[in-house]
Image (cartoon, rainbow, N blue to C red; front, side, top):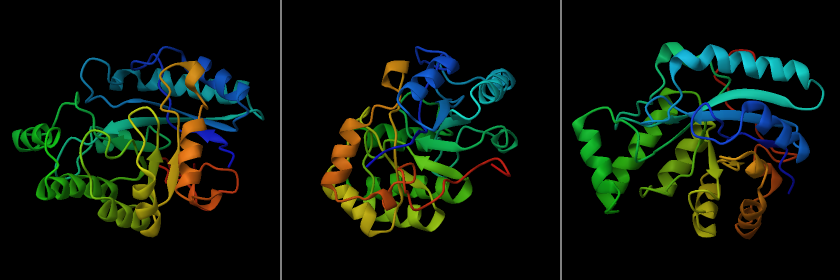
Length: 250
């Protein structure tokens, strides 16, 4: 399996160590044909992407697309935070069109929507009871239904999720499930359950340093062990599905 794009990388616009161009050059060095810049959403305490910086980030992405035209495609995304049990994410509706695509996941350091959500996710960090897992999964499903989310990042790494429910929603909405090594890999058995429900997948680095961009060795090994093929992974050469986009015409 050959992965041709890394759609989850961070830069100094949030808490990555390299610039946008550093990540682009690293991706070219790895032989990738596309890279996504996906800094953390504004709800991430201390280092979330500030809305006022969006024009500068867009300018840099557009400039690099011109500079490296024919060598690589550069996309501007964001790793949004799921902040409400109703599926709310920390990207206001009026800002979604600034991004080419959206990733979304749960992070412990994100500001949550209300006290009910705060209490649920706080408790979910320590307990994976059936009712709590179902309630967490329902929040993810609602987010996938409300927004054009391209991929759910590192699912199940911080809170428990029902992979059958998640996989069915992913298949229905066209949202990929990420295979990422940064926050722990999903067991092969859970990947197979997701595949059985029809979920598409995306293999990403979640790079926080340019040297990590395009490093997929562990993820590919796990995907092979779960009997995933290129047709299951949208950013693999020969991948069978396209990616959900947030910007019209992208």
